[in-house]
Length: 442
Image (tube, rainbow, N blue to C red):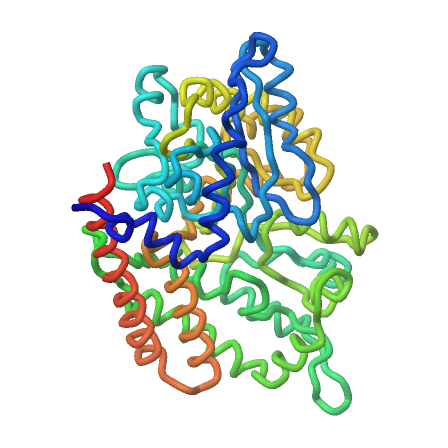
């Protein structure tokens, strides 16, 4: 006999805590109001929010574009959104649309989302309008679970006031050479300006280096972690050599003097080259509007393509949603070229990139700075979700391995072997849970 404790979602509620159960008891009443208003089907959307609670512009645009569907958007604090969404799915009263960022697979494996394949096939919807990395991000076991609406990619930012007419580095070796040229020191030999710092930012240079060498982090069957491999080892060795060349103490001391906003190393002018995501341009406009900077492709190896990483902001339909057909109409609207171009042009800050590739061929869109660079990077982007079932564990263990290597605590091989083992343990546990979910949730 199945009990509360035999239900994976119920078990998750115990982890979430009593607050989730209270939410479960009161939430159904929020969705018992009439589903029709002035002849329009009301579709409930939950979207994540932080300090601001501004409703997504796309909701207003869609509601004004037709008179049969009304999207009613509600803000959910980002610290609470996952718990509340899963709780309402368990209770059978989820919203019709959720807005998310991060791994789709984490949600799909819980049985929390409705696959979109039937809608895609029935409408002959061209999924290839999205960049390949975004399709990869939306997929799990050959099914599409989300519609990507926006993205961001990493590029090489450089300070033109410092480098002058010097072209940006095309290879990692050129980056080292230019870092030597533009790094400065005081009379006591302490670094005052760094040409580049491999681990400064939220995506270490070593990861791009290894991806460009063809690194893969999961076996074809999805069951074995592959971290201690030649491309990854070589990327860490390059990082170690960089820190040895310029001095770990020098670079660490400089990073310790940085903060956020106007105290960011690149904005201060204390870092000449930095790998940052494209929305960083908004930070520059806010804190250093007079800064003269350029954007180039991430450095690569001779004969190799530059690779970046690009995740997605996405919409999905939770299991148990009342109005999936109406939601699909909204998805087609939000992913269209016209809607994405219009919304991009109206965006006032943090210029997230459109997910629809057709927008990048529009003459109006091309007027914006660096669009050709962004498109080139996006065409060769990879999803940052290398191991969907152990995404958090992967990045935690990989980052720890990099730190151990550059601080000479362990060799590249030993650090990566330990990280690989720890990630594998997390993956094994996640796969066991996945099998349980498949057996008990229909």
